[in-house]
Length: 132
Image 1 (tube, rainbow, N blue to C red):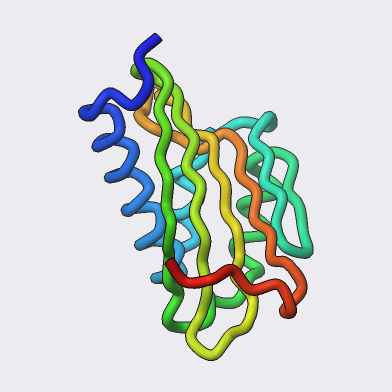
Image 2 (image 1 turned 90 degrees about the horizontal axis):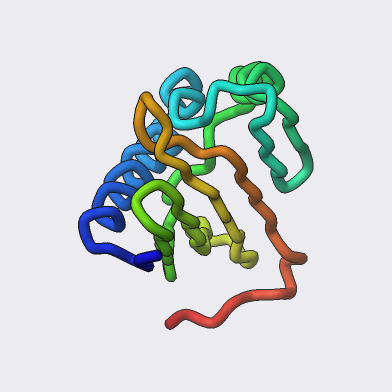
């Protein structure tokens, strides 16, 4: 199995960037389109969780927009072969003290790259990752 084939990493990076753009813009339908349209899709959030795409769709439409200024850092994309990838990143907001963590499992499905599982967490405000 080939790890991190450049063309596959580039494809996932583009999909992840488009997802992030939809997230920051607060576009729930676009965000949902990046997920596997299945009852098997899982997302664990900071104070929530959704099992299946229907729960996630309802949750996304009920959520307020993200705070302005979301910043990503230390984003890592690791691909395995041509059809499987994991994306991990840290995120924060201007004036905030906590650094959030986001992990996504992406799989190439017939409609293209889709997130099949996601996890978002934010440690207590006293736990701050150093800038690198």
